[in-house]
Image (cartoon, rainbow, N blue to C red; front, side, top):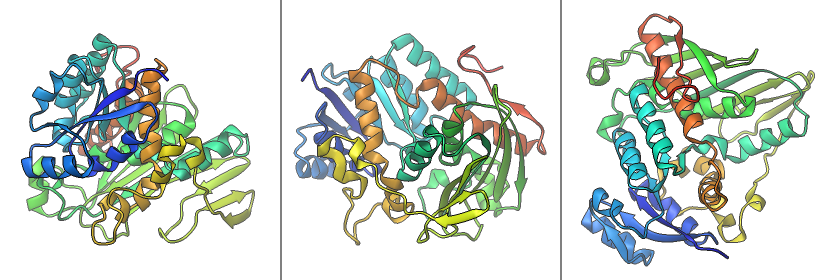
Length: 373
């Protein structure tokens, strides 16, 4: 076996979920952790036996031993920290979204191009067992020709950290956007989006976004396909749902109405509920258990990713494995920097459309130019 990839994890709330995954991956070394809270840093460092610890992000970047940085910090920090890590010569994995502006997406693309290091947005929705199941149906030809795609992510964010309050719904749309574009094998080209309803003034004033719900219709680049995405964050009564529906000419897949139900598979007019299998067998043996369990695995100490969304559909070890193996194999990760920018820009442009009464907005083509038009 060759040299193991030395990983530093930044942010140890949700980020702690990945510590044992990297520790048990045959091609990774869980080398360092980064956390501003000295108390939490020491506690987790002792618990997981990680001697290299940093309270400062910039100091961590100066460590020549570190090959890759996995960023799990608040959304406002994603762009600046990703760019700094790429410029420091580190491979970067970053939780969603990539950024909250087109300019920052462009800057990350440019930093990746200049550094030659891998960038991967750690999008859970394209590594869930449900996504892998439908991808298998697509790849086997059972779906047939895809005709339409629909995604939704509705979640009540009241009580989450302050920067979430009043966030435009589509600025955090990648969970609903990405499985559709990934299954279609296309990028989003343009969008028309309408805002609906109103949130309270105290929330709306934070980002100048008044809408309770934003619903978008996208045209896909170099394709006859369209897709629909709906997103809500506040003051809209609905059980948590992070769903996608795929309609083919042979078979179609619809997400369940309630989380405790099973999804529906259609073959013509015949319908049946299906039990989606786990895909741990695709992973190295040492990290297979983490498709069904995490660090926060007791009822009184369970992270919200396991309370809502069933642990992100078992996606965490699949994402970490993809990131590590893309480095080992010297290839772009999935999603790579261009795909990550498109998935993120889809939501940013959708919100822009909603704020302009549904006017069409075209997305930048990051593969053609690093500067949005």
